[in-house]
Image (cartoon, rainbow, N blue to C red):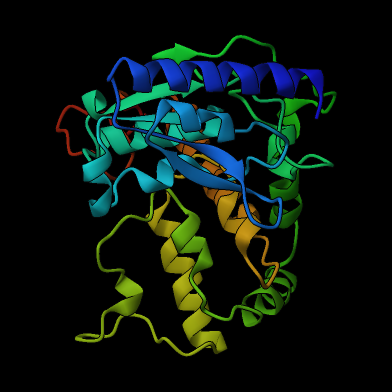
Length: 289
């Protein structure tokens, strides 16, 4: 563990213990070591147990995923350890009225990226220190040499492909899908109580893992995240078939930026979102929200 990780871990434990001791929260949602020494989400309810909390380069999970779940209400008010991408997800949940601000105490941690080597999405992260949090853990994220403006390089390569070549490439990816829905479960913005993929009357998406049903599932899910995806990358990380879902999400994010004046999902909790905002005052010709 690096010195930076150790410093942040100590800060998280101290803040969590204080919040529980003062009675400001019922539960702290953070990271701990699992049975196989992997880093997993954990729920801490006693100040003396905060020593279990860890911070390292394997704190992948976007903890905002838990917040809109019905069974989480018993844990509110709850403190949540958030990286930059987690904070963006919280902003989206607030905008979509899935949570209320008074129910969560946000503990922001500076993040130099996850993974060893760093995950691709971390190379181009634009929020390394979450803002507008209730408790900010001191520290500076480790510097990353990769220029952040290269985020859409992979999308540019896709856009340069001929339609037939693009079809063959993504046909190969989608055919590998086993319809486990791990992408859905890991996504903080996939919170429907009943997913469209599970509806049978009428059946919108075939459930069998064949090309037709797989394309329907992946395309529908991508468009449901249009203008909402915060780029946390959890869908791609957990996919057992290795489908580059981040390329789809990046393509849609690039389109949103171009059409809606540099709009980026989750940068704040007040800017109206494309496609989920009804306002007669929107200037559609200019694409301005």
